[in-house]
Structures are given as structure tokens and as C-alpha cells.
Length: 370
Ligand SMILES: Nc1ncnc2c1ncn2[C@@H]1O[C@H](COP(=O)(O)OP(=O)(O)O)[C@@H](O)[C@H]1O
Ligand SMILES: [Mg+2]
Image (cartoon, rainbow, N blue to C red; front, side):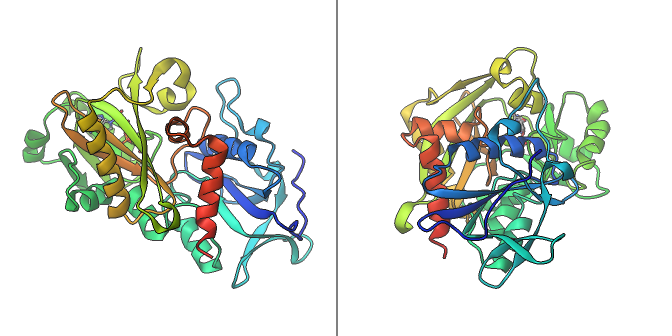
């Protein structure tokens, strides 16, 4: 791949935004697809883009940012490797971030006004890169350190949201080495969902219909995180809500709601259904067909959850709505998918904010941190 070319001098009037994508989490490929869409949506008259890929081993490379290379092709997800571009290091220089070429001495490739970490999962959505950007003193899109870490961890998401009166379903936390007691099995009942506390894109999640399969499910989840949640399966519709930080210090805003229905052979909204087979495995209703009262309730909980976790910029709050119309929070994503089939941008488009305007608003919101 042709390495990226950026000059160290920003064109007057343009904002230089580093799009950071790929990364060390299993959601590497999804992040690349999300970044491809974001790159394709940025207005070249407004923004100068520095497309920074992170390999699966954590190496940073300056890529050419060609959106076409970052699409799903023949059911294969894109990947950033050391060959995807020029090796770079980022250096915090006290009041900003410099992109440096380490092979040519400390030659500045670019200084950056704002970072959009289009990263999902560990080392991206969990507060780690946010901490690095805080150290550098550079504005960035999305949740800060605490909210990122709290929302990444399904245990703490539930605890913080429940403390603010948002209903969550019954669950048990199995820390490293712990097993599920008989009393907990009784309390939760079958089926249960076994999941890593800190993961995403349905990685490591198993629906368990028979206690005999519990051990294997826990072991699968522990491959990703030593802390595992066992949740009572909630029979209900899956409803999602986008939240954006309010403009000019206003209240957070909730989008119209979406319903995701998994059809065909898929038992739940797993990885394949989400991304690989999204066209045929999932049906989406935007806006979701719900009674007005329920819609209002979900949107109110979504904003409350955003505030409970101290989110910034954006988040997607996911809920279950039962046949009795009870609402339960499932999880919050502080860097929701931005792929062409992703719910977050589609919900905002349906709310009157088209994809390029959404990206623009996120970057402008971040820049007000300056
Ligand atoms: N407690 C539950 N009850 C019913 N379905 C669940 C439950 N937990 C997870 N699921 C199913 O698994 C999917 C992925 O789980 P989720 O907790 O959202 O993890 P991820 O962070 O990987 O998206 C959900 O969208 C839903 O289809
Ligand atoms: Mg989810």
C-alpha cells in the first residue's frame, strides 16, 4: 500500500484531524471498516486528514487512508499491517500531538488539531488511548478516560446505571477463578448469556441452554476476559438509541430508536449476524415500532445512562423491551460502529443528522475542549 503523505503545515482554515483505527482488540477489522466510512464522509474543504492505522500488535502506521481499502470485501474484513504505511510515532509535545517518522530522526510529519479514535474494544474504547491523548493535551472525539473504561466493562455499566435508577436484568459476576454457585443458577434460571465483562462485537458470548454447557461457555469468555458475566436471558426486542453530547452545554440528545431483529439461523445478535451477514441476518426498523410511552422511556434512560457514566461526544445505549413493555438496559458503547450498516449513524440520519454532518458535529464538539 502506498504510504500516506502529509505535510507538517496545516492549510489555513482547515482542521487537521487524525483518524486512528485498527488497533489491538479483536474488533480491529470492524474499526477499519468504521474508519473507512468516516474518512469517506469528511469534507476535504474543511478537514485535512491524517489516517493513522494501528496494527494488531500495536504498531502505528501512517496509511493512505483510501476508504476503498477499508471496506469488507468477499466477507473478509480489512486489516492494518506494518506494510500498510509508514512507521510513525506520536509524540506529545505538551500542547499537542506530533506525528513523527522515526526512521528519519524526529521529522514532524504532522501536527494534529483533534483526534477521532475510531477504535472499538480494548486499547481504544476502554480509556487507554483516551489517557494517552489526555497526557498529550489534545482534543479527541468521544468519552474521556473514566466513561470509556466504565462503559467497556459490563459489570460497572450495570452498577452505575442501576444506581441511577435504570433497570438492568439479573446477572452474576464471576471474577478470575470463581464459578457459578447453585444458588446463582437458581436465581438466574436458564437460558443464560455468558460473556466477557470487557469485550464487544459479541466476541466470546455464548447462550447457554443447559447447565452442562456452562463450563465451556465460561472458558470461552475467559479467553477474552478473566472476569465473566452470567446474565439471565431476557426475552425481548433489541432496541438501540444514539446519544450525542448537547451542543453549547445543552442536555445530551437522544436519536430516534432502532430495533434490530435477528432472523434466519441466528440465535442471537452474534458477530456473524452483526457484520458479515448483516444484510440477510438482520432486519432493522428505524424508527422502532413501539408505543409512544415506551419510546419516551427508552430515550430518557439512554440520556440518563449517558450522564450516569459521564459520557462525552457520543454513545449508543442498547436495551431490551419485553412483551410486557418493561425496559432493561443491556450495554453502552462509547465508540459505536460507524460502518455503512451500523445503527448509530443510521439512527441519526433518521433523526435528521446525515452521516457527514454527524461526523462534523462530533469533531466540532471535541474541538470545544481546547
Ligand atoms: N441477557 C441477555 N438476554 C438476551 N439476549 C442477550 C443478553 N445478553 C446478550 N444478548 C444477546 O447477545 C448480543 C450481544 O451481547 P452484548 O452484551 O450486547 O455484547 P457486545 O458488547 O459484544 O455487543 C445482544 O445483542 C443480544 O442479542
Ligand atoms: Mg451489544
